[in-house]
Length: 237
Image (cartoon, rainbow, N blue to C red):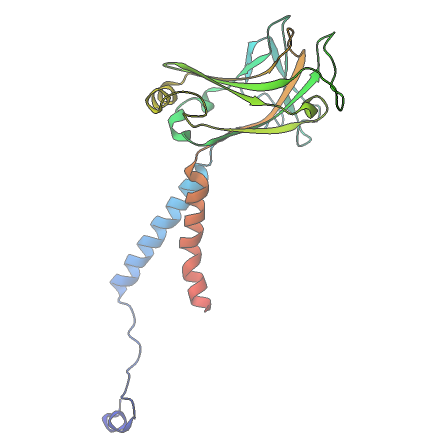
């Protein structure tokens, strides 16, 4: 650089922009790879789901009978159908992937689609403005203790698939945080059933798209998107 040119410049002379060293570039590459791996891990840690597209996915009857049906479920594919046995409500039990370690889903969400296909003979059918049988979905977790949660189902559950959700939060299930932590860590059974306020249970019910999602999943993926997308946005600026 011409030293006389620098002396004549009104605001001084600025040299060429310093380039990062090879070590710095390598360090940045390692950090970027770590962030990417974490994001992939967060994506894989998105929860467990049974969509019953072409089989029962390991779900079995706890009470009554249960079987996979190819007839249109909630999104139009197959679903899990269950039938009661006399005055015993139909109840289905989840495969091991739902209960291997429920602790990872603490404060997460349970979502599912449900429907009542056939009521018992003598049940008052639903109709606008009239009474009738009220149905609700009961979730049960068995481990060191037992906890249940009832989700009110709207009346149209007898006419169409209804999407329901619940949170795996101690207060919602009516237990202490200590009991909840112990139960989730020791869980051996997770069941789903459709109950009614009538003396007789629904005869035939259906379940579809049963899913448990851990609470941090959404936030982790959002942070990853910011972390990976930030540098690209700065380069375009």
